Length: 97
Image 1 (cartoon, one colour):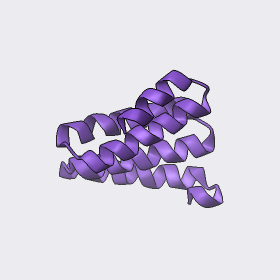
Image 2 (cartoon, helix red, strand yellow):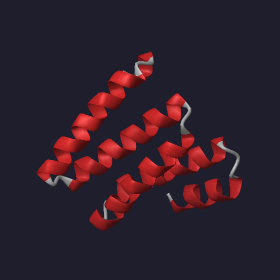
Image 3 (cartoon, one colour):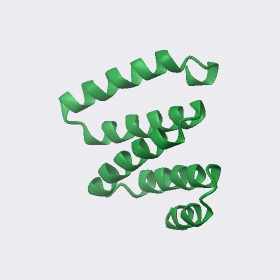
């Protein structure tokens, strides 16, 4: 839905998914939904909220020691930092990924 620009609908669906996964205690799925929400927020132009969501996702993924997904979220954080002009932070995230 974010591809066609219906961010309100996407946001509602992501919030529902996040709530369900939190109730189930499925930490990997929580991290995945948070990362997807971050991408949607970035695409919608809310880079600050995107960063918060990516960082929450990253925290969970680090606890789960999921290397591939950690790299993916670090890459997203790097791209986001580059987008807002924080090139040093972008370099750090991209190198870590």
